Image (cartoon, rainbow, N blue to C red):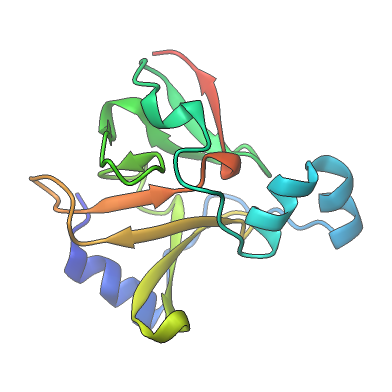
Length: 149
């Protein structure tokens, strides 16, 4: 189980090797994704809070990257953070997510990206529930529910 200290180490010192690498041209991403999915995942955008019904979806299943189908989260790790974005306590595998120090907007945060294709997913914070204490605050537009358990 990842904790905040491990997340900070990865963000500052480099990420784990992904299971696969997915590379496409910007034109290929634009053709595959909707305009909003492209803005969020490829241009580091953020969707409006509470804009997705995924925030209130708590059915069993798995969540994958909308860009490359890399499995990211299990619904058993999902919780209602009240922030307006889908939130999880842990990724499905330690190497599913890449971490990057984000010093934009006058603050220090840790950006999360898909470790396979580099899609911007959201940020991770150290204010989640026990036992990990992590809150992966994800853009719903970056995720797709792929199958039930």
